[in-house]
Structures are given as structure tokens and as C-alpha cells.
Length: 310
Image (cartoon, rainbow, N blue to C red; front, side, top):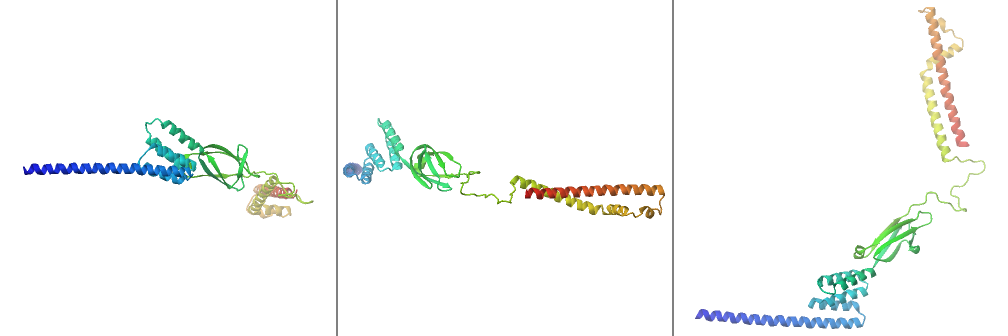
């Protein structure tokens, strides 16, 4: 009997607790609904006064208290009015997540696409050198450094500067640039290798009367001749030193010194004659080589000087 009384008391207490909890939950839910309605009313007032940023905050408060698709649509539209593209697109994306199977899903996707088309990205142009003209479809946008707004899409731009080669480049402005709140484009122009100089400015003045400045090709030929002549003269000097004894014998023979008498000791006459003939021949060959190389070196040296002068 005592156990039954205790059990009955516990059941009554549980019913009372459940009843009170349900009442509190219902009261809390009614309070949230009321606060959400108040927030929407405030948002409507801010809309009337075109205070869109305050209206967004109130709609966000209403959505936290009582999630509703209409609140998200209002927030996305207001972000669009304020040109806050990133938040607008994200809110449209939240609306698509909230509306998985609803009838308005196609309309929400279309509005999101229209918002993307209206969004602008600030594109900053830097260049080397500075002062490059930027053209789009033959319309001049400005001179670098330059900042211009572009909607999302693909653009073919031309970059021009006097004295430099024209450059064409296609840039793509996408959602990633939108999230990064800007895009940087750097342009490098190559100078024209053979520019026409203005008539009143002579970067390479003509030599005065009596002066003749060799061209680059003539310089190459002159330096080649000079180098070859120096090589030949150096070789001739080395040859002369190496063949000095033979050339000295030839000079003595030309002066009439009788080499035969000096060679008679210990040799027969035929052997002496043959040796003399051989040495005379070697000496003459050495002499011819010496003068041939020397002459060629001097001719090339003279030619290189004439090439420089004339």
C-alpha cells in the first residue's frame, strides 16, 4: 500500500512537470513568433525610410527567431541594393538550401544569376613601364596605373604605348575574384627594337666631314684581320727564333764565307758537298717560309688598319 502511494505521487509529479514544460515551451515559441513579427515590422519601417542596412539586421533577427524563406529573399534583395554582391549571392545560396523542394527554387536560382551579372569587381592594372593605355573594343579605358570595375565575364583588352610593342590579353573576371574583392592584372610591354627616331633628334649623329665611322660589319672584319695578322707575326717570330741557326748559316753563305773549308776536316769531298747542298736547301726553305709568313702578317695588319680608317 505504501509502495502504491509512492508510485502515484511520482506519476503526478511527472505529469505536472510535463505540463509545465509544455506550457513554457509554448510560451517561449509564442514569444519568438511575437519577437519575429516585431522585427519584421521594424524592418518594413526601415525599408520605407530606405535604411537598407538596418532593415537587413531586422530581417536577420526575424529569421533567427523564426526561420522563413521570405526573410532570406528580402535579405538577398537588400544586399543587392547595397551592391554587397558576396553577401547577396551567399544569401541566395542559403535560400536554395532552405528551399530544397519548393516551387520557388527555379525563381531563386534565376535571381541569383541576375545578381551575379550585376556584380562588379574592381580590376587593378599595373604595368612596366607605367603610362600604358588600356583599350576595350577600341574604347580607351585609361592609363596605367588604373582601377576599373568589371562585371563577371571574359574581356579581351589591348595595351599600347609609343615606342613599345602592342599587347593583347584576355582576362576572366569570376566569382573567385568577387570573393577576393578585386583582381590584379600586371602588364609587361617589350620595347620596339628598331624605333624611328624623330627628325629633330639624332641619337646617332652622322660623323663630321672628314670622319668615317666604320659599320659593325666592318669592325668585325677589321678585328678579324688584326687578330689573324698578330697570330701570323707571333708565329713568324717563334719560327725565326727556332730556325735562327739555319738562317744564320744562309746569311754567312750569302756574305761569301766559305763553309766548305770549315767542314773538310773529317769528311770526304762528296759527303761535304752533299751536306752543304742539304744545308743550303734547308736554309733557303726557312728563309722563304720566314718572309712569306712575315709578309702575310704585315699585309693583314695593313688591311685591318685600312678597314678601320676607310
